[in-house]
Image (cartoon, rainbow, N blue to C red; front, side, top):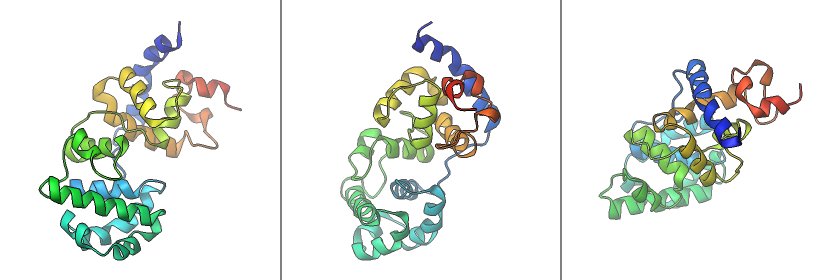
Length: 217
């Protein structure tokens, strides 16, 4: 049996076990509007969701609309997001994205992949997060560090590039599982399949995971 056939055989088992372990998994970023989720996802790059969730309540209260972000002095915006790492670049991207939202999308976050990818600072991961969680539109698989790492260990991909990983997962996973797979991978990656010391001995996926078979005891 070749690698693709073997991965295809294991997919339903892995998805079932993830669902059993994390039935309530959802997006960890706190938001109430598409704009809030867009901003939070931009801030989450190279930063924990926990840290972002500490920053965003005051940020969202201060800048409730895209026009508010566009009009803000960039120095003020930088200060408001300073603790999220790479804050200058993030502030610049948020402001530029909001300018385009105001000027070309009537102040509303676009609800298409093509529209979202036009926004500065938005690649497929961010677009998939916003589409899936704010609009209920699933056009791809969200590939963050957890989903990428777990997918490689499971033998679902051999790639490191998120776009290539997403392409592999879209071909392998049933479409109805695309959004849940990411949420459950995040929960599993934090609790069990950690980057440095994966706890394969207590992992329910271990029997279906090539990575677990080669991990140190």
